[in-house]
Structure formats: C-alpha cells, structure tokens
Amino acid sequence: MHKALLLLRKIPKGKVTTYGALAKACNSSPRAIGSVMRSNPRPDLYPCYKVVASDGGIGGYAGCVKGKKIAEKISLLKKDGIRIRNRKIEDKYIYRF
Image 1 (tube, rainbow, N blue to C red):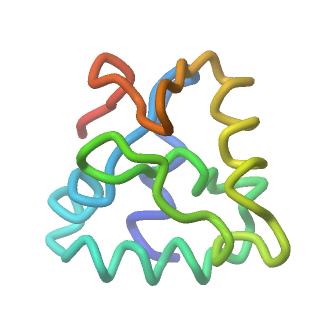
Image 2 (image 1 turned 60 degrees about the horizontal axis):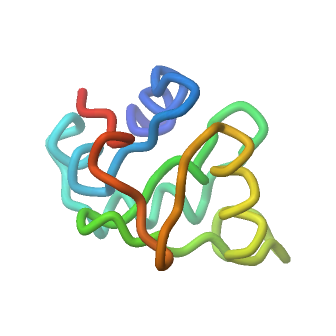
C-alpha cells in the first residue's frame, strides 16, 4: 500500500489536503500523488476525494472512482462540512501533515 493512501486516513473530518502536501509527506511529487489517487483500489477506505489542488481548487476525481464526476466529489466534501466557493476551498480547511 502506498504511503499516500495510508495518510488519507489521517485527514480529520472537515479537512482536506493537497497533492503538494501529500507529496512532501511522501518524499514524492504532486504528479506521482495524482497517479496514486487515480489507481486507488479502495476509495471507501482511502478517501481520495479529500485531495485538492494547492490553490484550493477542487481538482480531479474521475480517475479516483470510475464513473464518478466532480459533482460527486463536491457533494462528498460538503458532507464533510467543507465550504466551497467558486469551486475552491478556503485555506482553513487544508490539513498539513
């Protein structure tokens, strides 16, 4: 199991992290983290929807769960209590390892 997937489980409810923060924690690159998120075998256990762009943008989701859309990612984030404005997340919701 990739370390990035294990770190996803440490993100508290109401928080998200960035590809960059995960990359730093894993001594990797944001692109490599994106690849790991796309190949996530168990999104129910490793919540890849909690990973956003470093500028707070929603980022992608289609690769995480086949057939899922950005609207579902936004819905999941809102269920976690994340407030989204103009498809961006405020810095106060960002969790850093």
